[in-house]
Amino acid sequence: MKRSKLFAITLQSKTRLVFLAVAVIYNLLLGLYLKDFLVLSPILLTFYLLSALPTLFLIVDIHSKSIRAVIFVLLSLILIMDVIYAFRCRRLILFPTMASLIIGVFYFGAFIEKTRKDGALTKVYVLAVTGIVILNLIAAYNFIYNPETPYLDNGRDTLWDTQTEELAEEICADCETDAEKARAFQSWIVSNFEYDFDYNPFFQYFDVEKTLRTKKGLCFDFAHLFAAFCRSQNIPCYVIDGTSYTDYTDRHTWNRVYYDGIWWDVDITSDIMRTQNNQEIYSFRALENASVSDQYFYITKIY
Image 1 (cartoon, helix red, strand yellow):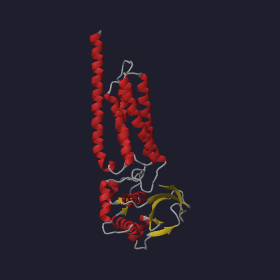
Image 2 (cartoon, rainbow, N blue to C red; image 1 turned 120 degrees about the horizontal axis):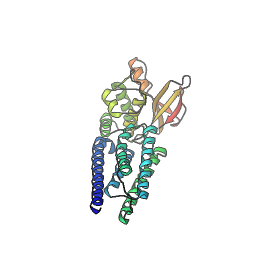
Image 3 (cartoon, rainbow, N blue to C red; image 1 turned 180 degrees about the vertical axis):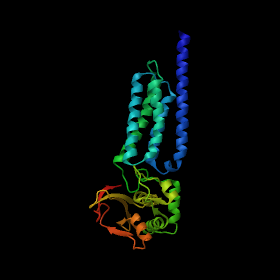
Image 4 (cartoon, rainbow, N blue to C red; image 1 turned 30 degrees about the horizontal axis):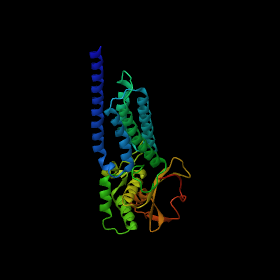
């Protein structure tokens, strides 16, 4: 009986170590894949930590139902926050981080056959990891619902990496003021990109790597690329979503950028189309404030 019990415990420990190894390797590979974004985006780093931190629960043997219940609640809250972030901020890149959480759910739900009390050190350890996870959950919640500087944030609907920032610095290398930088970004996009009439995505989100690689996109892509350039240089810039007053199926995305002490309206897509048709471009037009109504579109979102 003792030998059988010892074998069961050993087998369970080996299983836990296998799950730990798989989770650690997966998170390392995911971190390497996302490293160029994690360096510049605190919120993406926060969600990456929410994916990786639960792996720490696999370091110790956890057997009590109460502690496992706490872990399941935490994992559920992280998954819910991931889904909210993915859809509210259009960040599909978050879905790969859920795989690490699923590893933990699978282990604690299926591979602990017998329950018994856990030691004091195990409880303190779990409590410490739980506290760190909760702090990251609070940070993620505040970023999604109460951003301090949405016009400078990296990681909501607008996400850029180190390569994008280096490109922005190259484009505005000869510029001295924010006005010159913003106009340089607008001119560069208008001169190098074309509207993709064949692209009709079911779920629209900004992929900076794809946009820069293909040199094509929709108004959504151009507006977020312009915002990424401006924000990477600490120039306040909003992205604006709107719906036509006369046709609810006609939707558009453009920007409002701040320099010289006032906000300016800029429509990159319009300038691309007007340039191709040899028409006068929209360029930059002064506004009273960032949330003033538009002449042609009912504003549905400013972010």
